[in-house]
Image 1 (cartoon, rainbow, N blue to C red):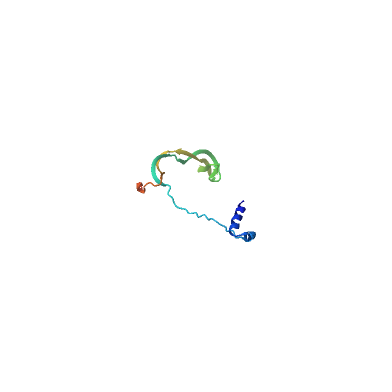
Image 2 (image 1 turned 90 degrees about the vertical axis):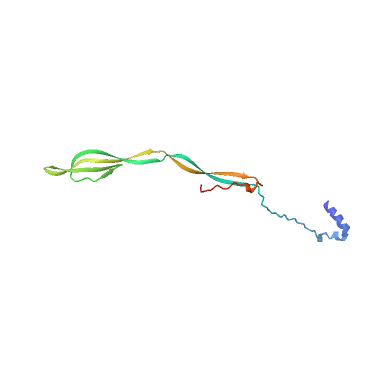
Length: 157
């Protein structure tokens, strides 16, 4: 139907001879372009403040120490040479010798010292002061007077 309307308009202004030669007709093309711009609009503000809080906290750090136990093991045995210090498992064995006079001089293993380490753990809870920063966030609606801001706290306090 739209083509009929165009034909009627064209026949009225240009004549029949131009309509027959429709292939050579010029049709204007219109194009619209959108232009996008942006602007800054304040929708509000945020005020962030940090506070330092001190509180007591109990700290329980284990205290480890070692104790040495010595067992005296009597041997009383005649030997030819002095035995060396040796380790068996977690026990260090230290030979103790002496010279005795019996018509002749001999080495006698008198005893051995068995040295063993035992670990003990004890706890000594202590109260210590610790610091913690806390943050407060406050939203300020748009249009609130900038002069109403609170002065900053001195960070050196």
